[in-house]
Image (cartoon, rainbow over all chains, first blue to last red; front, side):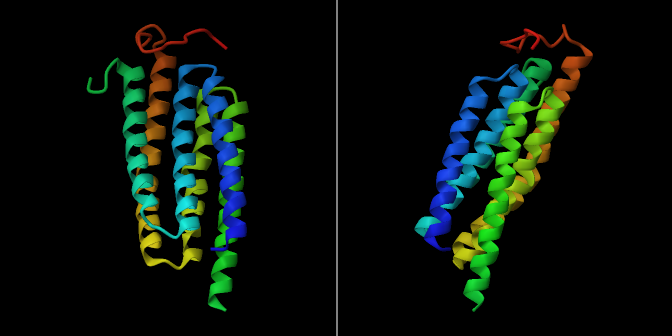
Length: 89
Length: 110
């Protein structure tokens, strides 16, 4: 993939990451905070994918897949904690 | 020839993914209510990041494309489950406001 496409995309995704942090800080309630955290994880996955395209190395996708797994577990645990006071019951 | 076509397709997919992520972030920032925010967030966790990961076909690197397909499958499997968990927690919170109040750090109404 040409560099002149990937580098502006990286810059834009970094700006989106900063905006997502602002949404996380200025959240109105705890559910919006969880939603913003899930969205931030997705933005970081996109950032790692773009870094992998830029460098031509597939190793960054290991971190992206691991981050997707951790974000899924974290979101479900937080939602269940809000739901019934604990992740397992 | 095929390389140019793949570059164009990858660039279009990347632009589409970036636009979808931007729209989704603005939606999460602006839309009131948890269900509306989940609706806006589903645009990023579904089509947005899948479009960005699908633009890996322009790299023409088999290892990168394999990992991207793996990540697409994983995200497509897990993001509806986490959205459903958040929506169910919000629904229970709406049904029984006092019973599940222990986990909140910010119970003030907006």
